[in-house]
Length: 114
Image 1 (cartoon, rainbow, N blue to C red):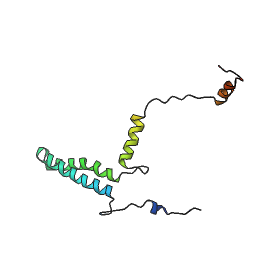
Image 2: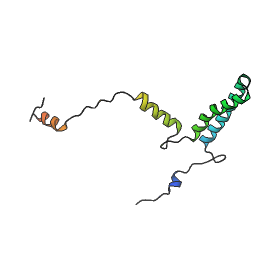
Image 3: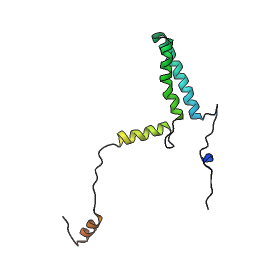
Image 4: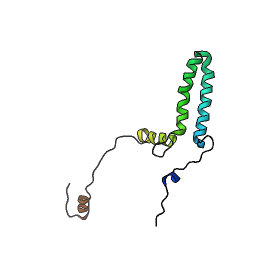
């Protein structure tokens, strides 16, 4: 017996504020904090216009992190999978074939192919 569940029910995500999930809201708050910090840090050094552009560049990756989804993975899960596949588990993969039929025959002493 199979029970049909509509797609939108399985993809339901709870929202807390302005239609954002907790993850998205936290990342948005962190992005605003990053932008404010960068602005006040660079305002006197580079001027307000350049500092405002630096705010956008600094806050955008933090904000995007909250909305990032790739194959059902969040940004942290995707980053960990990427690092594992490219660096931690990377290396030459050597293919060695094994003839199971030949191995079975040599174990029984029927025929030797070496």
